Image (cartoon, rainbow, N blue to C red; front, side):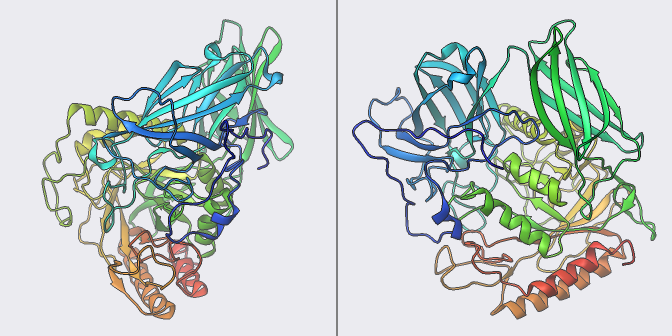
Length: 605
């Protein structure tokens, strides 16, 4: 994961760079390991990887102004990118409101080795609406808090030092956009907002003709891997060559054109699964006039997700045409020191390592989207992912906690502006992350939060990606026959209170067993859990009891379970770990034993 280029540290005239975490809230062990000169110095786009890149993370100038302000002439101080301004690790710890703009500013120099190349500026994610300026020229804008975006800034560059300015507007839950669990005033199950830049910012050099994206689709039934490249600047006669390797051995190769699918025959494919997460490596090149003018590396897996009947005749999820009971935690992806942004790469994957150690084979990524590197870890280590769309416009025309009956009407009415924004962001999320083999389920809605036009959105999701299953409404307004999955929520023990013979039935949330531990709490009083216990043994006893009950439900048609949750989260104390990740709150061996029985529920092991 080593970087191939060093980040440039912003220097503020007349001042020495200073950084330390803000506030007095609990922090993870990795907070002390943050390198403020080069935070998150890990190549951020593993499935479209080039050799050269320049990390722009580090200390930037920042200012918070009114909505009508122009580019500041004076700055409020320094902020550590890529941590949200509200976070401790940003060094600021300041709340942004609907009446504010957040400004970022730094300088950079394009490496001399990039002479003659186009330069792309890449953002992993900025929440929510961003305008980008280079040397005072507006080079682009982006709306949406969860998907990556890129801008060709070549025409705005000058020799020597260049100035980069970013303007951000984020009304959080006071706006209409998807926000997930963020709320302007955090309380209960709603958490601190995460405004501004919250993933890596970086530069890369490209040729005038370059690969902008790939669509990688495994076809297990035909023993083919189908790769569709998109090439910017492609001309007649240009070719894209694709080589597939198993280790160092070339097993398939082919060539095609911009926008055309290339089917590569994979003889006797090694199938990907949680027990054997095998990945093929890909080398892709653009050939023009007999010369290679762009080259990227990627990876892919041969795996199939579908529905089918298990030995008891129940409709279940199939992986590679075999029934697989999926068991995983609800994973919020929040951090006490970084909010949306894990302190370091090592911190981010720690949660996933523990998830795997505890015997889970799946993760439900709840109301948030992670950096590409999070999904890459799941790809390489065999964790299935159910991916939620972060909810927005949380208003109700029903009791959101009464999910025990069928609906026959459209739900919350959104404005045309909010609906368009939702569709565009969901599209961007799916197209940005669809190549990750770990993702097997898309979930557009959760518990009726901003749910609307459910059948239409389920169909829209399927059109965007027909290769995965659609969980139309996790614990939400249930419509018969809509999507592939009927997802029920019940705390603390799961129950099957609705059935649909045409859909896979899953227990999408249950558990919530609370254990507050002094010294590891977001706040000392008024913490919350569905039920609370006194020690790890009591929590584990109840977990095993619930898991045994879920195993009985598997015999009656339940196909998966999602336990709430991986970690405590702000005032919620129902995590398997504390919010600061310093204490595991369960007896790990017993939990793994219970989970192993569940993940093997359909194969008799």
